Image 1 (cartoon, rainbow, N blue to C red):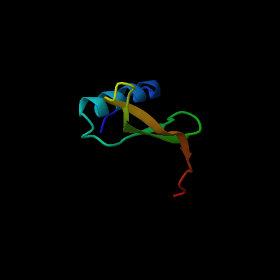
Image 2: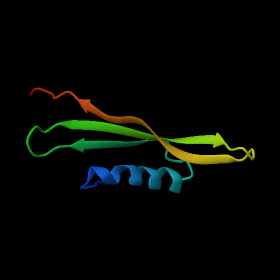
Image 3: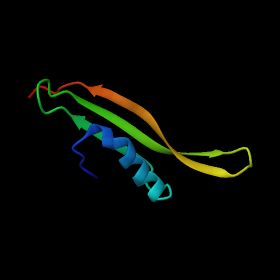
Length: 76
């Protein structure tokens, strides 16, 4: 779990966690809560992706599978 003040930092954090763990981390979930105004919340998800390049070598990358999915508010 990590905390970031800025939504724009989430993709680089996801890359750092997944690539740095050599895929031991299988998913990174980013939750963005808008604290001012609407209090809108959205979720983004990143996962590791392994592909084979033209040379036949495996390459590890990170793919965002959910992008800014807006969550419905929960009524108390």
